[in-house]
Amino acid sequence: MMAAESGWIEFWNRPNAIYVNQRNLDAHFECLKDDLLPHIPVGGMVVDYGCGDALAAEALAERAGTLMLYDAAPAVRERLRHRFAGHPRIRVLDDPDLAALPADTVDLVLVVSVLQYIPPADLPRLIGLWRSLLKPGGRLLIGDVVQPDTPLYRDVASQLRMAARHGFLLPAMVGIGRLALSDYRQLRQRAGFATYRPDQVITLLADGGLTPERLPDNIGPTAHRASFVGRKPQPAAEPAKVQ
Image (cartoon, rainbow, N blue to C red; front, side, top):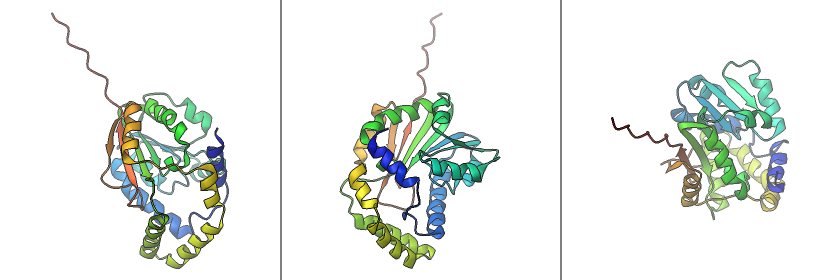
């Protein structure tokens, strides 16, 4: 594991100020749920890679046949196991569980608001992993990709607009100040915060053996970010034998 990745895992493994309160967390995942549900295959097998607290998991699992949740942070996985113990459609994966998933069995892999925390050198390998899990015709959905040179004020403005709509504007303003004083900014500089132009993501998906497409709208509440789908091709049909 690279130092950059381990730094972000440590950050998400402990309490942090990304979400200012429960209303913020609920509003974020409500938006994700609304955006993701149209992409969930009915009765399909779905892997949510880097799922975080997964507050939309039950709604997604109701549409999917099986929802498998994976997060690299052990504390997040422990919370998920406690919440979803005994759930008939939701399974929480650790690293060995993820590695043991059989190839060509998954209909959809979700990777939402994750790429910024992955070292760019690791991304081609991970795209290969996600592709290997997909059935022919299955899809990889990469959401909330941060584009280079995006000014910080756009993320702040997006957060404040959501806060105003959902009634936590004052806590959001306080939370933004608290986050600015935390180690988050230093961690972004030390561990890195990966950004990609849309054409770079398209190229990475194509080089990884997927048919790429940029979605017209981003998945999640940050409209100025970008989302993409990569589809695993169907195997070529064998030519008919000449009688």
